[in-house]
Length: 152
Image (cartoon, rainbow, N blue to C red):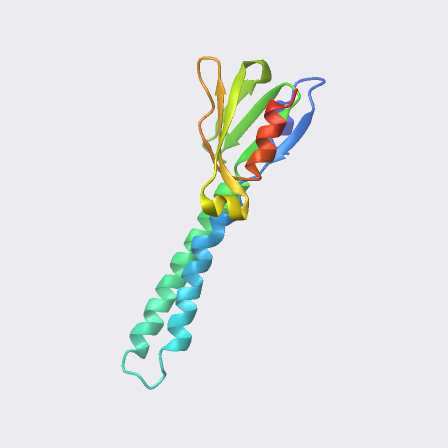
């Protein structure tokens, strides 16, 4: 059962669920491409072939670690908008969660780079009275999240 489902109050309903962007996996895929290039580009008769294979295996292993880290971050992060509040939770064993009631939300900022605009991801910052949520980074469809938070 998701964290968001466990903390819902009686009569409260989830209106939108946001996710961390799949762009988080990109460094792992780039490392795998480099490893593949090392394997297939360096000629078999070359004296550096052994070093290229060792480097490719190490780079591939780094790609696996990068992929697992991104997967764990994506799976253990929950962002939900309900009809009463915004809920953000990250972590599995060591959990960090923040909630902000909708009547305390003053503004929502969206920050997108050029790549963010092209691939539809960005950072969302929810400002509230007195304090705000920490920046929600690498969010898929950040404008849609903002619209669900600021909708009346």
